[in-house]
Image (cartoon, rainbow, N blue to C red; front, side):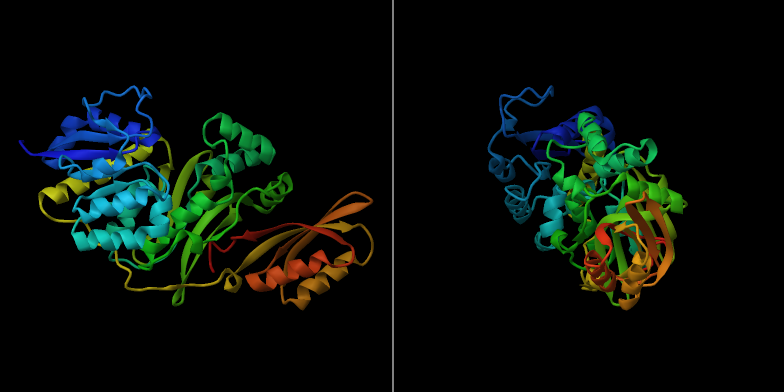
Length: 431
């Protein structure tokens, strides 16, 4: 085995360090599987003085990322810097030079994935990003390859470990949102600024990538309807449990007639659904296809070694293709489906109202629901002598009608506050 392929690594933080470790620990197996030795020749970092505890070739470290891409002794490029820039510029340049790229950059792929894929296709090289969605869980390749001959109807995922950990603690321990989030930070599941996680941005980017592949259509992260978990309360969790549900932050990509719906939001999920059992910081993706039926992928969605595992897997595939002057499966956007506005989707809803405990309030609330053609399936009252809470679950209703109803309820006599509105996915994600 005389063939050597030289690797340039952009970024050597948490994931990059994991990539280096796996390449070194598994060098012999990787060479046997690839048919060539994969040698790390250049590594771009921000801080040259930082001790990373890694054995790197002399002179490999540089703070000039562009020089890694341009170097003659780099055949393939791995990008694990994160962020849209300068990563986007570096990846585009590498592809233009005919160098395959492996990336874990969900933000970049969600925003510019179709454009970068077109550059890769024109250059005849691979752009691989299995690690951009759900860490070590294989979902990109199944959507692009294993299920390419099937018709995918729906993909539903728990795609963010931080939010799933927080909701697990709230559900199982009765912990408040604030305390559960503090625990997530202490354990390293959440960043000091957890906004990208708890507000749903991270899951929305991953949902866009999944939808693009599942429905052969270009979907960008900003097109995904998004709600976070910041306003979930112990009451929401308690009511969900009483009704036979758990609260999860779900990423849902579904096909509806000739359109697709892409959304990320907390929802009541039936306890009997496989995703309801996904606890703590784990991720899972549930796929429904015509021929294959129901499939579920489960595992660690983040972390140094899990994410690095997906990166190295892509690297081996790209190396094989490069040696054979071939490339992997090309993404298709031939269906070019449009995104259905969230207001046109239909599901059930949980509505929690703070109301005055006096005669006629329930009747007025019922009239308001009826005026917007939203039918009530269940209702009960909790509270004390001065203030009560009305808990309502609707039948299936159009989102736009439910929103208008909630706005009217906020101004209704006897209603002090619309405390919570959440989707109830009781019919296993029918849209």
